[in-house]
Length: 121
Image 1 (cartoon, helix red, strand yellow):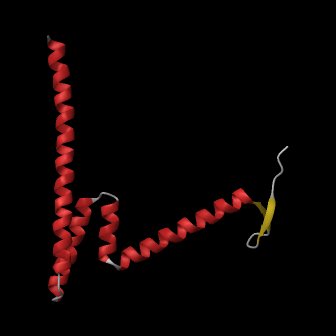
Image 2 (cartoon, rainbow, N blue to C red; image 1 turned 45 degrees about the vertical axis):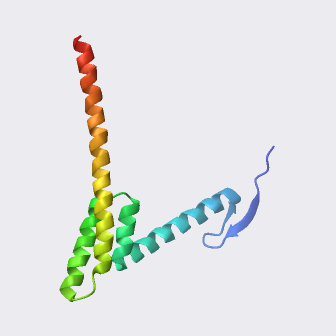
Image 3 (cartoon, rainbow, N blue to C red; image 1 turned 60 degrees about the vertical axis):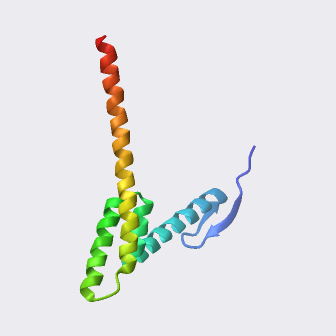
């Protein structure tokens, strides 16, 4: 029979925890802290938000956010060359994503059309 190892006592709830449940609780609290940190950081820094959107492949939202930040920087009289450079890269990635989507959709359409043509013969 396998023994259940009881090593530590959780000070918060005064319950005895085994290793597995303690790891799960630690992992859950770490991920929760990371998410809160990311939300706090992303809320304060526009470029962090843009980077987060890029990681999620939300290129359109990233472009819109970058354009809004550039317009705000221009209105405040700040240097907006950073936003212009980032915007060029984002627009290129957006065009690449749109082209890939178009190619994929056209391939699917041609495949269906080929099946229809073969079915008529």
